[in-house]
Every structure is written in C-alpha cells, then in structure tokens.
Length: 505
Image 1 (cartoon, one colour):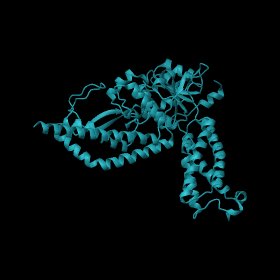
Image 2 (image 1 turned 90 degrees about the vertical axis):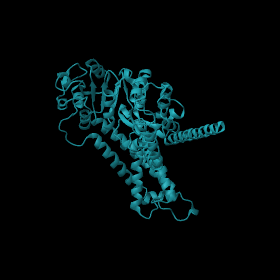
Image 3 (image 1 turned 120 degrees about the vertical axis):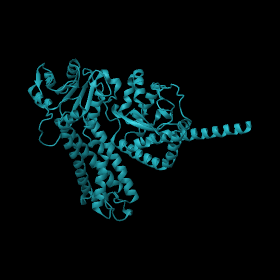
Image 4 (image 1 turned 45 degrees about the horizontal axis):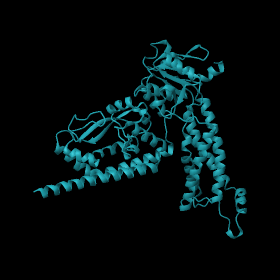
C-alpha cells in the first residue's frame, strides 16, 4: 500500500473530530441543494425570455398567454413546488454509495413522480398550477441539474467515507477479509476480547505485509458491545464494515448488521455467509477475486417504507378502535373459561434477528405449547378453540403494529424456540430477518406454514422482492376474506350441531 493510500485510509475512530460528519454533511447538502436548484428552476421558467419562448408556441386562437405559474400566492406556490421536489428526491438524500448510472436512474425516476404530483396538484387547483409545457421544461431542467448535483455528492461522499473496518473473532478470518477487500482497511478488532488485552486488536495489516498501529481503537472497550460499535460508526468516517465471523448468528453477526443499518454504513461479508443474507445484486459477483458479497440491509426504498408505515398506522389504529369492545368480551371469556392469565406472551424474531414479546389472547392451558411445528396440541381450551378458528386471539398484536415492532403484512414472526429448528432445516431461513415481520403475509394466504418451511420461505422472499402497497392491500383483502369464511363456517357448524341435538331429543 502506498503512502498516499495509507493517508487516505487513515480514518479517525473515536478521537476528537473536527468539522461535520461526512454523512451529516451529505444529508444537509442533498436537501438544501435540491431546494436551491428547484427555486432557481422555478425562477428560470418564469423569466420573460422563457415565457416569451413558450408563448410563441401558443396558437393564435388560444387567447391571452397563460402565465407560467398560476397562483394567488407566489410564495405559497414556490413552497409547494420545493416541498414536493425535496420529498420526491428523498431516496437520494440517504448517504449510500451508488454508481453513476444508478444515481441518474434514481433521479429521473424520482422526478417523474414529482412531475406527476405537481400535475395532479395543478389539476385540482391547489396552490399552484403549472401549464404542461412549463412543467415539462421544469422537469427537464431539474433532471439535468439534479443528476449532476447528486453525482457530485456521491463523489464527495466517497472521498470522505473511506476505509473498511473488520469485525471478527478469529485471526485467520480477519486476515482473509483483509485479503479479499479491495478497499483500504483502517482497522480491525476482535469481538471476544477487550481492546488492549491483546496487542493485535489495535493493529492492521496493509497489503504490503506491514502492520500499522491504530491506537484510536483503544478508546473503545469492546466492539462486541453494540453501544461501542455504534459509537465508532457514529464518530468515524468508516464507509464499509466486514463482519468476519465464523457463523451468521443472531447476536454477533446480525447485531453488527443492525448497528450498520442504523448508521447507513455498507456491509460486505465473506461469501460463505451468502445463504444467510440478502445480497445486493449489483455488487454481488462484480469482482470474482474478492470473495466478498455486499449485503442489502434495506431491500425497500424510502417511499415504500413510508407508505407501508402509514398503512400500518391506519390499519392498526382503526383496528384497535373498532375491536376494543370485542377484545373486552374475549378477555372476560378467556378468564372465565379456564385458570390462567388473559394474555399469552411469546418471544418472537423481528428485524435483524432482534426479539420482542408478542401478546395474544391465551387459547391453551398454561405451559402447553411445543416448539415442534405441527405437533398436536390437545390442551386447547374451549374458548381458545373458538379464538383460533376466528383468529380473534391475534387482536392484541395490533398494538405491536402500532408501536412499530411489526407490520400488517410481512414474513410471519416466528417463535424463537421454533425458529432454531427451522434454521437447522433450511439454511437460508435468516434471509427473512431483513424486514419487519407481519401479522399476515403472502405465505399465510397461500396456506404455507412452518410445517413446510421451504415453501413458506419461498413465499416470504417473493414478497420481500415485490412488496408494494397494492400487494399489501391484496394480501390483507384475502386474509380478511379467509377470517370471515372461517367465522361463518364456525357459526354454521355450531348451528348444525345444535339442530342435530334438538332433533335427537
């Protein structure tokens, strides 16, 4: 490694840092730059010269020339245009390494949405109305200027977020990761010992075989402590983390992924773990010599996540409001039917292997559940049988959706004890951990359960790849239909049995 390369890979970790963090600066420049360019474009299309050119194309019978911007309040109109533009460009405001073509493609796709929204606003007559030619010209100016702006910001980010941090427990795997990466390595640390207990934790290997001290790492006690790792990522300019760990386990491996996700740090891992992670298609296999794959920590875009969260809030809020009287009756029935608590809690897996407590109405006698999928459960209570048939035992999970631990639609959250068995049977099971779990999902409406884990996983991964609000709405509609059919079937069955008993008398 040359002296220049070494100087470029020297990244402050944990020491005193002057200036603004590059990712913070990127976000600020992305938002302010988009707003400024939009304002300049707005003013440009309203200059006398541009308006004269546009007026020249109007037919003689069209009457007086139409203003480029029709609005009772020009400042309000400008504010609306800027707000729509900034919101539309939100996906590019996230500090993430992108190729030039990907940046331009995302810019054009976002501006198409901006144009559609502004056209709709003008059509309904709210605040601002841009004539079609003016709107098309504005989008054209923005496409050119914002593409150049975000390509420049990508270069700014790459120049200031250099270097790779390797996290591992085994020296040979750490060395393998160092050899595999083509990026400058700024340091490594062991997750199993405290920094300073082993001198190797504060040194790195260069590609020339020379070890160089990185004393800044000594400021942190232990990288396996999630808080310490997050502090390093927050205060450093590390651009990539490689978890060189022997297993893609829940605590160490996915704990590192969760921390990197929160701090918008890219993650690559050794190819031996590719069956446990979602791989970024554009980066996977780009360098056959690297033996590294890029991990897709966020498979859904910004607008998809916002739309999905709004859908979750509306569904859970209205659901809890409407179901409250039913939940009171169910709680009383559970308490009167059998001894034990009203609610049953169960530890389940959420995003990045984290766990949370799911609350359900108790449908079984205490201590009667087994982790083995499909095992007979002969201790279901009378009320519990009705609750399961009508899915009313799931109603308390609406609270988990409201608080953001779950989503309405997604891979069904698995019980942690059951999941250990499923992981042994299906090695790719952990690919489900990259999105929030759901109350229902594509697998559920297609009758795929934990008894057929491979089929269930196939549906879950298909949903992750194709998620949209339209797909969520279709899945919810199908699930509601199934619930109503099950409830009706239970009612008909009960009536038939009662009639049979009456006739038997």
